[in-house]
Image (cartoon, rainbow, N blue to C red; front, top):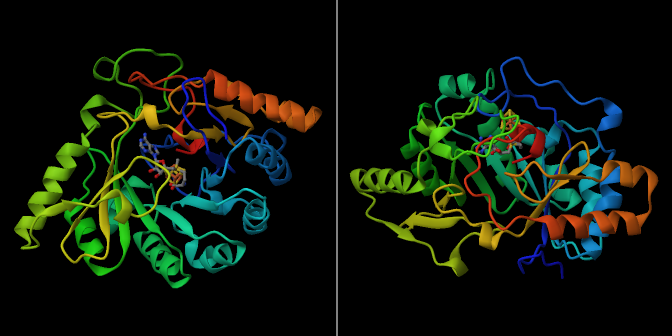
Amino acid sequence: MATDGFGRRIDYLRISVTDRCNLRCVYCMPSEGVEWKQHDEILSLEEIERFAAVAVEEGISKIRLTGGEPLVRKGIIEHVRRLRALTGIEAIAITTNGTLLPRYAADLVDAGLTRVNISLDTLDPDEYARITRGGRLEDVLAGIDAAFEAGMDPVKINVVVVRSLSQDLGGFLRMTLERPVHVRFIEYMPVGGAEESDSACESAPVEGWTAADHVPSEEVLALLAEEARGAGLGELRPVLREAAPGGWGPARYYRVDDAPGTLGIITPLSHHFCGECNRLRLTADGKLRACLFSDEEIDVRSVLRSGGPEDVRRTIRDALESKPEGHNQRVGTVRRMSQIGG
Ligand code: SAM
Ligand code: SF4
């Protein structure tokens, strides 16, 4: 079992398999796009698998694939199958914008991946096209259907709440009445856009992120509760941990009576949960990050290319040792979210 310098158990690895994406969400990528990494700067799938094999020996039992958009990476299905086959792996999950799930959901399940988080910030087609700079809402909705049809479980939807976007959160509440979907509202985070900054949220607007756009989850909950009452659905009730959809992160769940789905909130800023942090992140270009909000990285790529498993093991132990106790509301990171994987 791996523990870090503060006694936290680390069993969850998020792997960004690509920095590329078929969308350009306004809060994640600049309109001109980002300069893609060169082919040889990106870890090969075989290199990722070698890293994962050592990480599993060090106590990692859960892996989430992310990006960029993980489903645009060539060979992703067989990659899932090989990761799933590692002894000690309990589950593989994916975070995706969902647009390619109609094509891949059944193959992913066949390869051993059933846990899916689909990012969707609005149910309005025009606003969706605006937020994603050209995406089609119908593609994601078809992706959600495909996930259910393929038997994925749990199917979660991630909604990043941003004040200046038009999001009609009540529409997501109604989704939970129809099927066992778990919609999680995530606070907008100050990631990306900074060369170097250690200042507090309130005082340092970062390109693409301003404190004014941050909506505390308590406000989201109050709004959902009002929607539920207004629609005659009664009160939002907390879902006990045992009954909540199994997760690897710190979401808190609620539901209205008799709804098959749930509503969750994730509060990285207003109640940060660093004390329970259980994860490491591997970027597509092979840097190991111990904290989303810290730009301290360990170069795994060169170790994978010139060293053996014991050298790789050292990088993991170093990352565990260097994992900070908390993020202290730091604003801005040098990398953007699409380059870290969320
Ligand atoms: N392309 C995939 C997707 O969109 O799900 C995976 C990568 S994306 C970077 C992972 C998640 O990060 C998405 O749910 C996205 O909405 C979220 N995200 C991006 N920028 C964010 C920010 N500044 N604050 C909070 N979440 C953010
Ligand atoms: Fe692409 Fe996901 Fe970033 Fe949107 S949030 S631009 S889908 S990586």
